[in-house]
Image (cartoon, helix red, strand yellow):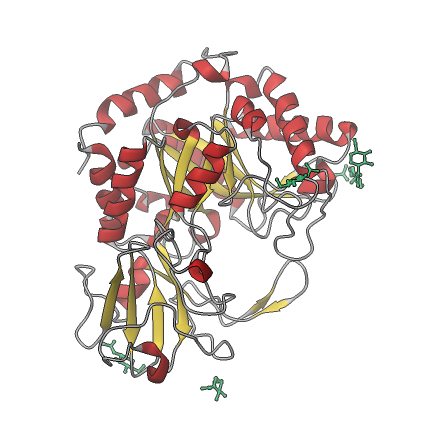
Length: 419
Ligand SMILES: *[C@@H]1O[C@H](CO)[C@@H](O)[C@H](O)[C@H]1NC(C)=O
Ligand SMILES: *[C@@H]1O[C@H](CO)[C@@H](O)[C@H](O)[C@H]1NC(C)=O
Ligand SMILES: *[C@@H]1O[C@H](CO)[C@@H](O)[C@H](O)[C@H]1NC(C)=O
Ligand SMILES: *[C@@H]1O[C@H](CO)[C@@H](O)[C@H](O)[C@H]1NC(C)=O
Ligand SMILES: *[C@@H]1O[C@H](CO)[C@@H](O)[C@H](O)[C@H]1NC(C)=O
Ligand SMILES: *[C@@H]1O[C@H](CO)[C@@H](O)[C@H](O)[C@H]1NC(C)=O
């Protein structure tokens, strides 16, 4: 159901798309329209989530993911994302009054960001690459998903102590381009501002606030199979957790970014329609009462469970390194695999705990010894409330295809939009 607040917002989006001379507006004068967004993973087009499955009428922005950086900086690659679908994605978005953006980079596609922005000459070339790409596909916006400046991501990214300074210089040059001046520019970012030359979060993000329309904080993967214990994938808060378990949250991220000068209405909260799984023996899974699930139990890292049908048993990544199963369960995958009912409630025989600090749920199958921390309708409602009360710009969900019958999406829209 379309909530009422979305109607004027969609009308605005329509104007934005059809009548473009919003040109050369200063960032301060730019739209403050709420962002109701999702990332569309291009590679799932042919894997159960075609364009026709998108609930276009509930969003005003979609990011096609990903155009990956390339070694020569003069092109972006859609090879891993069924790029042949991008033109249809854009025309369907526009037919629904939705802004169509490209997300550039991503976890596997950020290898050549640093080198592409390393010198003035390379930055100028990359500005042209991005602008040409936007024109070629008739895009309304570009999102930079660099994971992450001066902070090695997947393991073989080009990297420099000057990454954050070069990123800002690039964005300033891009903003001066007459085509890019009309685009919505954003960045998908971590829980703290970009790293400065000594590898600490920058204390001043005002330069980025002046050139980006907004940042989308990727508040997920905070805990996962790489962590030392089970923990929340997407904590709303962690100030209430023991100090050792304060690994970041929506609350800490908003504080870190606003302390560095990013206005709250330029912060979009990234939310997750998936969770991470862990192999936890029953001896670790419960509190001493043997009924309540433990909060941060140890897990068996040598026994990563396979996730849902979108997971795979393992593959070689862009760095040439073999990676086993990710263990990710989308919200629909939790239902498919018997953890949740079709109503999104815990299935019979499944242990359940809602962590009131992180405001996220856990499920546990004692027989298979699989524990999953994820998001449900209740945790999405808590995040929507937080966005409304904190006056953030909106939300974006990774990923569009993770939801089940829009249960999560409807929950966060209702909480965010209906005061
Ligand atoms: C740049 O790389 C892309 C693919 O990564 C290739 O298609 C293109 O021809 C290359 N351009 C130049 C000038 O080398
Ligand atoms: C600039 O880009 C070229 C490719 O066009 C690349 O070979 C070179 O390494 C880049 N410069 C730096 C300093 O990374
Ligand atoms: C970083 O930038 C400074 C100032 O522009 C420059 O002197 C230095 O050589 C750069 N370092 C690297 C590793 O690119
Ligand atoms: C980076 O940030 C840290 C922490 O705020 C600060 O101590 C350091 O001086 C900064 N380094 C640079 C090069 O700005
Ligand atoms: C962890 O899993 C591996 C692989 O299944 C298994 O061989 C090992 O016994 C497990 N360790 C514990 C402590 O259960
Ligand atoms: C728990 O896991 C076992 C073993 O994989 C499976 O047979 C059972 O159906 C699962 N329980 C539920 C409620 O899904």
